[in-house]
Image (cartoon, rainbow, N blue to C red; front, side, top):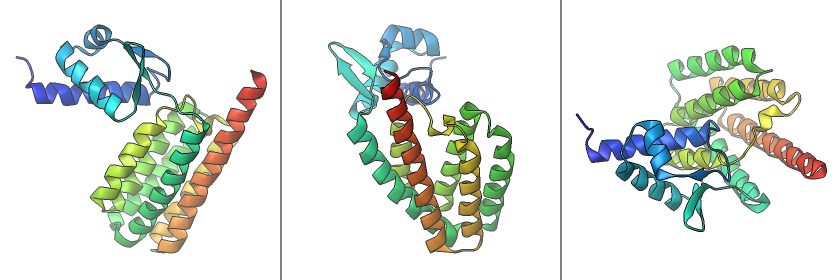
Length: 217
């Protein structure tokens, strides 16, 4: 039995978005309705509607008559990190105020278990997303969570992760522990500052990566 159209559309959108997020489709890759429908086992109508939605969100862009995964130029990346820094800092501050004891324990367990991935950038990047999403939820502010979801979807348009830089994994883990410690102490100012600093370091790391890539080119 076929799924209702609205459910199929939601599924198609989520499937394509996840494929972009995990790097199956990278910036510049062309997305074809028929290929996507076959890959995900969804009819072409919800695929078409999902592609239109992704284009509206600027995650896809036109290349002639084709849709391709969008890419971010230097200015767009800088603008994104400015917004992310402020929103993430606010989320950490609110988490220090509103997080339940159970949510704090989950954050502590996440940080402890993620140490296993410090030398595996791909897995650490996935764990990093889960960690940040948990802080967003712990803020207990639905509107902030919505905005951060959009920011993190756009982050998927970056071809590489800053966690791939040498030594960045261990440093990021230490920063995560400082953030959680501040949240546990209910220190709103320290939690916000720690997460803002964490995003700033990630941005500087990415700028250095891009500079290195340009010099190789």
